[in-house]
Length: 135
Image (cartoon, rainbow, N blue to C red; front, side, top):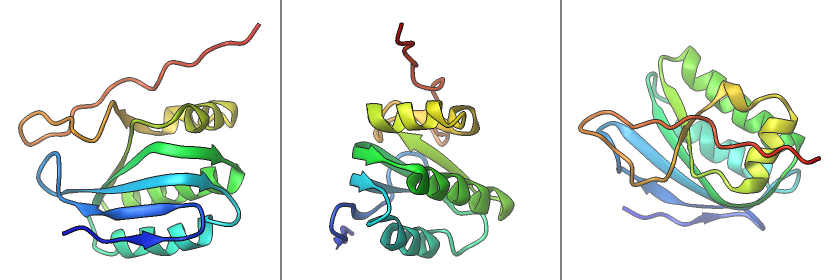
């Protein structure tokens, strides 16, 4: 089932039962910032309602990410963890990786190389995306 839920710059193009059993994927694209965070927050709250929810956020299409966007990612991960669930970030764009790294938050998340990665009934993980040091 494919849903279309769009705000001015963030589109959550549906929920898909892909990867390992029990995991839902939400595709986020555009700006993850002040204008779009409230709408995405509402969508994520709906996705995380049941205890033990497991969510994958495909962030490959995110073009900008500010502190509110980072706060939303952290709050979502915390909410899921406290309810016995889990969050993975799939294929985060370079701007997301740089924002997470710059905020010292990259170590808080588990990453997937893409939304098509699965190994049996478990989600395959990869190390945090490579960070580049600018001289």
